[in-house]
Length: 142
Image (tube, rainbow, N blue to C red; front, side):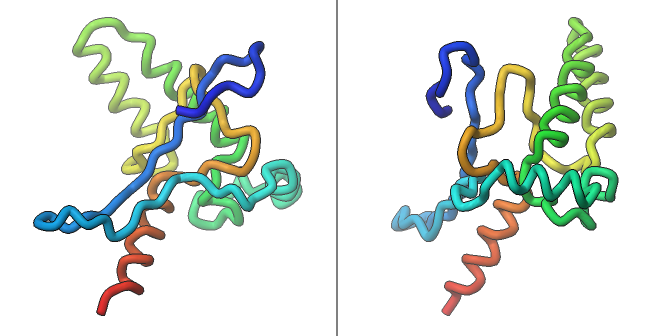
């Protein structure tokens, strides 16, 4: 978790990473964070709105790999709906319903209202980070 930038907003920015290691020697081949520090979030958001990126199916979006503000708001809405049931059976049903509401049912990403997007740079969707990690490992193969 990353520290707060403003006292008024005490939500955390949660980032994850994927790593590959060799079992015997425990040598780490690579580790990649789901964060891109080189991207200007404001210009991406403006361009995504101009392109109507959010109205397109995810595979056709220009910025599909990045967490946009619209992605964040949609994820928060889905996670709030999923947390409404208190019993174990209700929680399981809610988790399945929330997964069905995501654009990609197999996507592990879920941001709640207790989390926020980074102030600088942009967060990358986990499945894109994983795919890039595998591409990197493939290029390093002898």
